[in-house]
Length: 192
Image 1 (cartoon, rainbow, N blue to C red):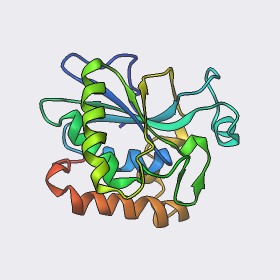
Image 2: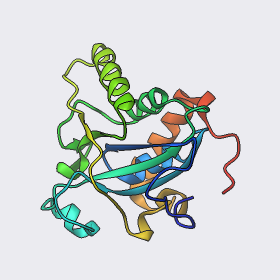
Image 3: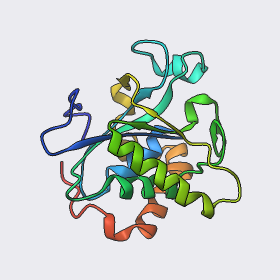
């Protein structure tokens, strides 16, 4: 998907962008590229103060960026709310600056908004979802910040490295959970 065709600065006509943070971007990318109605998914960085940060800089925690995925989707085929449902089913929105053993502000839970409509949907969704969690949801809901595409080796990482340890023990279980929980939302074909 995104290695061959990097996302443009704006979505194609009739499409929208969604930008989410929820731990390691490899996990999010692997799930969302399997969602029907998603045109493309790209791993990147957002929410920080440094232009064009490197992975090393983001991992050092000095730039303020989160690891994110930017998703181009067709709202006639999958709604923004449905994307949020998937996001909240594959990460823990109640842990501040961590997902499992990944710890740091770069692993925070965040929704970067591209429109007033997305803000309304996200705020309503979080308000309704809170009843499903014992701890408070700590997901940031903020306007889309400058987005920087991650290095090419991060794109389609799970697809290209399924035998890598992190992929086998962290990414694969999240993909499997998505496939079981949201089977009806799976992409019908996975061709590029």
